[in-house]
Image (cartoon, helix red, strand yellow):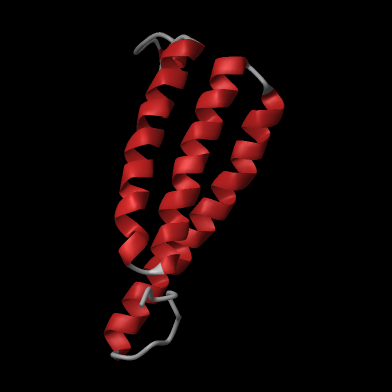
Length: 104
C-alpha cells in the first residue's frame, strides 16, 4: 500500500512488536491444541514459531533469520493444508482417510 500512496511503511520495530504479539496469541492457541489432534498441534506450533522468527528478523534486520522464517512458513502452510484436508476427508467419509494423530 505504501507504493500506491495509501500509507507509510511501518518501522521495523513496530512490525516486530506486531508480529511478536501474534506469536504470543498463537502460542496460547497452541496450548489449547494439546488435548486434540497432533496435526493441529503442528499447525499452531509452527505458526507460533513462524511469528516469533519473523519478529526476530524484523527486530534484528537479519536476513538469514527472515529466510529461515520463510522456509518454516512453508512447513506451516503445508501442515495446515494437510490438517484441513484430513479433517474434511475424515468427516465426509466417516472414517480415517488421513490420520491426524489423535491424542489419547
